Length: 460
Image 1: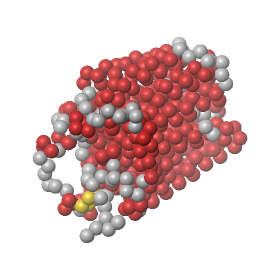
Image 2: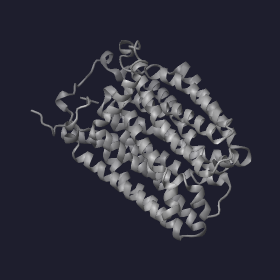
Image 3: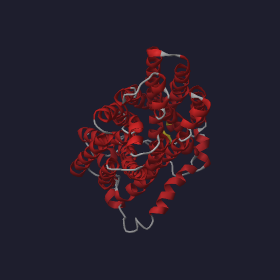
Image 4: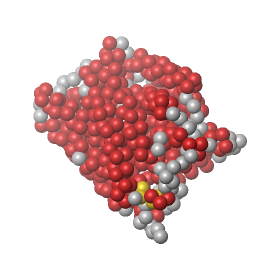
């Protein structure tokens, strides 16, 4: 007998052995899965190059296109909003056409957008091409986790997603210093051309080697009315956010991700000004600790979340998807808020090289914490709605991006009005609220899922 408090799948309902021909996870060998994961990671890395190669060059870009830094800074918010919209579109189409076709359709658009940004002569052109570039590049972030859900079992998914995220977040460590060096010795436009070339290489690789991973793709590819009903499908994806567990985890992860942007976006006007850093290459190098923290934490976070799921399923004899969120709770409770609050104190009260060094340590801790908070939340959105994993990932990731894009627009004005310390403390308190949300979802996952049934998975 079951009740609303019963987890989604009991051990009695799990078949001991599934015939290989009926097992969707047995379609690809381990070596094939590893190669697919490598391709996905490459496409997941490039969107972080798109975002990470912009912030260190904001002063130079503003001067080059005859705009003030605040106007160029708007491009950061536009970029985040565009990735949210692009994610919804990619998810809607991938449910119709499959995963491979969306990669092949969007990667050339990123190439076009990158060269468009590089050739921009004024702020309007810059914002337009930045929107196109970010809109198309979001497919790598959204479809990557979906493909991982297609080919990896639930107890393997966390590690695979951790590897994907770790490689992807390499862009956070490499892109800013690379952009800073190129901008200092040449021009920020060269960086955008380089991104276009890298995206072209990714397109060629996907076109030649990537197989279709969507379950029953041949049976379910009804494309006759795809364009006609795209708006309906977009709304259906957004409609998944009626699920309390999806909307709450998306918001909780947004509070963690906001701390990352709140440290990086105003860096040239806060920490760099405080410690007299004017060289773009040095500004970019200061972003490395956050990316390094992301890289170190992502695979470990995935492995730990897998182990927690397996251990608790053995204890309960049941699968409880919210077990994956324990790592996210720890990340949002300790490293995420403490790092940004302490950074605010250091920037305000500690001068000289010691202050800069301590801030970089805070950046490293923040990178670790943000990966701990966001990676399990994304894997969780695949776990709970496997049949509509593309829509689920896009909806939660889109809500997260939209929330961050709206919030980041007031960070620099808040710093100008209230100061770095007050602004950082406020954002840190928001991260603690996110930790409280994760706790509620873990404790009351059964009840929250029972509130609105959006077609939850019956098994991993």
